[in-house]
Amino acid sequence: MLLLARALAAHGVAATVAVPDFIHRRIARTTAGNDDDRDGGGGVALASIPSGVADVGDGDPPGFAEFGHAMEHHMPAHLERLLARRRVACVVVDVLASWAVPVAERCGVPAAGFWPAMLASYRVVAAIPELMEEGLISESGAPQSSPNQSDDDGLRQGKMLRALNILPAEVELNNGELPWLVGDSATQKSRFAFWLRALHRARSFRSVLVNSFPGEAGGVAAADDGHPARQGPRVLPVGPLLAAGGGDTSTEQRAKGDGPPVAPCKQQQPSSMWQADSTCMGWLDRQRAASVVYVSFGSWVGPIGPEKVSELALGLEATGRPFLWALRKDPSWRAGLPDGYADRVAAAGRGKVVGWAPQEEVLTHGAVGCYLTHCGWNSTVEAIRHGVRLLCCPVSGDQFINCAYITRVWGIGIRLGGGMSRDEVKDCIERVMEGKEGRRLQEKMDGLRERVVTAEATSLAQRNVKSFVNEIRRDQPPLSMQMYSIL
Image (cartoon, rainbow, N blue to C red):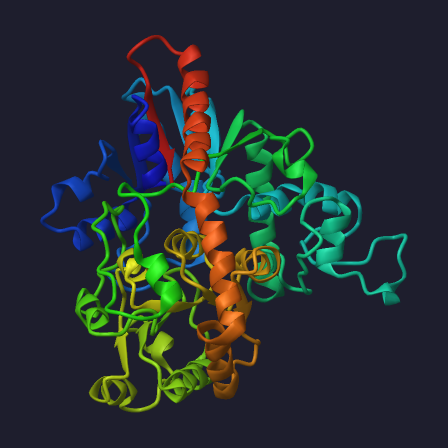
C-alpha cells in the first residue's frame, strides 16, 4: 500500500496512507530516528485511525474476530471525521478493508479498490458469486459437487475454476486450497461472510488496482479483459510495485554459482512492522555465491507446528549447506526447534537463525541461491525481482494459488510435500540448488524476471497509474488531488 501511494504521489497526488493505530505505533517503533520512514517515504503521509484494539507491542496482531469487530464498529466514525476535515479526491481501499467503502459514500468521496496480491487470486475471489450460483461452493464457501454432477465424479477445485475460465489449465488446487478456506468450519463460515460483504461493497468501485505484472495470467484469455467477474470494476495492473532502485546484478552470478557474493544495492524500502536483524547481512558476505538457502514463512501466516519445525531444522542441517532462517522469536513459532539448535549451527558456521531478516536485502544478495517460502505474494514478487529459485511450502489463504503458478505455470520452483520430512527437505533443496533441474529452474526464473522488470512492464504499470489518476482528476477541481489509502 505504501508503494502504491508513492506511485500515486509521483503523479502529483497528495497521498496519505491511513492505518489502524496499533500498526502505526509498530511502524514508528521500527523506524525510530527516521522521520521520513515514519511519514511513509516518497512524499507519502501516514495517518493513524483509532481501532479500540489494545496495543500488543511486538507480539502477534489482534485475531480475526477482534479486528473484524473493530473495523465494522469502531474505526468508521474516526475515518469519517478524518475525511470531513479535508478535501479528498478519492479513497483507495484495500479490498479486504471494505469497512471504509460506506464511509467514503457518506462523505461523498469516490472509492477505488486495491488488491495487493496477484491477479489470479483476485479473479478467484471475484468469481465467488458465480461459483455459488453454479452450485460449486456452498453458502459457507465449502466446495461441493454441482447439481448436475454425481458425487463420485471427483470434481477438483482446479478443474472447477478452469471450467469457468478463471485459472489456466496447468493450475490444480486440491480441496481446502481455496483462499477463503482458513481455519476450522466455524471460522471458515465467519470469514466467508466477511468475503461476501467485501465483494458486495466492491461493486461500487470504478477501478481496482492490482499488484500484478504483464503475462501473470498464464494464457487465460479473459484475464486481460479488464473485468474478471461479471459486472465487476475495471482492473488495472500496477505492479509489481517496485521500490526505487531498480534491479540488481546478482542474478548472473547466482546462475554461475562461483566467485565472491555480490553485495546488495541500496534501495529505498517501505516502512516495516518488524525489526530486522541486520547482522545476517555480514554473515551473508562471508558465504560463497549462490550457496545459501534462505528460509522464511513471512509475517502474517501462523506457526507451521512443532513437528514441521523440527523436521525442517534437521533437514536444513543435513544438507550441509549454509542457511539463513528467519524464525520469529516467539514460543509458538519456535516450538519444535531442537534444543541448542541455533547455537549449534552457528558454531559450526553452517547456519544462522534470526527473528526477522531484511528480506529485500537478503534476496538481493548474491550469496542466496534458494528461497524456501510460504509463497506469500510479496515474497514471491521479491524473489522474482531478484531471480532467486523457490522451494514452496504454502500454508494458508492465497498461497496455494501462488504456489501453483510458481511450480506449474512459470516453472520457477518446486513444492515441498505437506509432510515435510527431513529427508524430503534435504532432497528438495538439492534438486533446486544443483544439477539439471536446478539449472532449468534458474533459466525459467531469469526469463520471468526479465519480463517483470523490463522497461515495457514498468511503462505499462505507470500508464495504468496515470490513467487512474487522470480519471479521478477529471472529476475534481484543480489542486484537490488528495487521496487516502485505507489499509
